[in-house]
Length: 239
Ligand code: ADE
Image 1 (tube, rainbow, N blue to C red):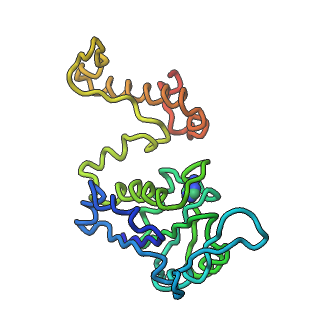
Image 2: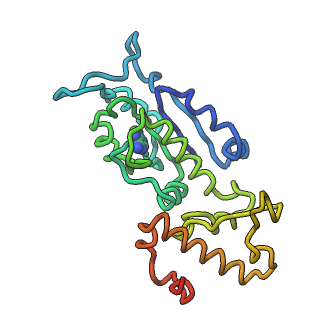
Image 3: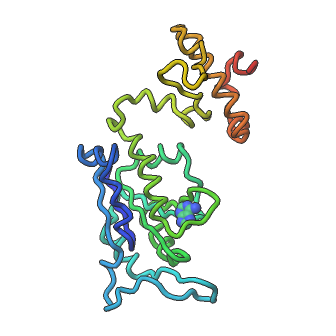
């Protein structure tokens, strides 16, 4: 997958060379380039923002540098992703959707956002998705792109050593994951649940499923309400 990121703070993306994300880049599973929006300015001050039409607090990003950046970086395979608190909520489903794209172009807005005409114009040439991490406001899109890229990259083929972990983790099946334990079996007088040490794989799977259901019901009733009843078995219903 190819990813381009445009921002006025390219330094924000230094961590993308670390850990499994850095490894995915080194192995060319992810081809990532970060660009400074000011590359596409032409005045001595390298201006990217101005006051909003209609008044109000803050500054808005001017359309010209963004237009040139998108002209330079987008092609027929590009999906433009714009992080914004007004966007579609970022979920594991959306991460899967984005992981299936050939080319993602992330446009990081700052201040009060990017002039709306940039998105409207781009939408005539490519799919455009505004994406929100949640119901809160960040200074800009950079941190949101770091989050999205991490969630997307781990879904790319070959990035996780054991892809079975993708099937079992939280949100894979609409549920939160059951609690996990490792050695020692007793720590500060707290014991690992006996069943996990029993070696009975059927019982362990059932216990984990029950724990996932109970945890999700307690912490995220919205996820339980959204479950497809066809994915529940008789024992689930009893839980
Ligand atoms: N930019 C500012 N706030 C944001 C949010 N909640 N999600 C994504 N991008 C943002």
